[in-house]
Length: 191
Image (cartoon, rainbow, N blue to C red):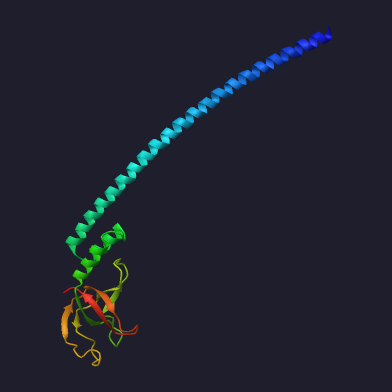
């Protein structure tokens, strides 16, 4: 009899355990289905987010292009080296590069020679570091005569006559400096 009771209890325990396993399996299947549903929703939300992100990037590009076009128009109308430099700094190196180079060259269309430093060390031009136009630029610290050649070098420059004047504050572009310690330089300037 003891044996029958033990078998009955064990059978009942096995049936109970089997029922619990069936219950856990059903719960696991529900959880698995919930996870699949969440994954689907997450995928849909991610796709929607990608669309919103792509639209925002496109809008930003269009806004930047419009702002760049407006700034380019402003730079051309202002027609100064500072305006062109500000445009380039804001827009980047890939905006209107050829047009920008042509505009700077039209602005600084005259060429001539100036004395950068006097023999006593007086500097007539100071280098400008903040122009982002490429090349070396100077600002005149006083009114300066522009010449057709370098004074004191008759073999290289037989004609050193006065060609024009640069006023104090004018910005010029360095074209050529015969040597590092040279006190003269060839420049491009605005007439």
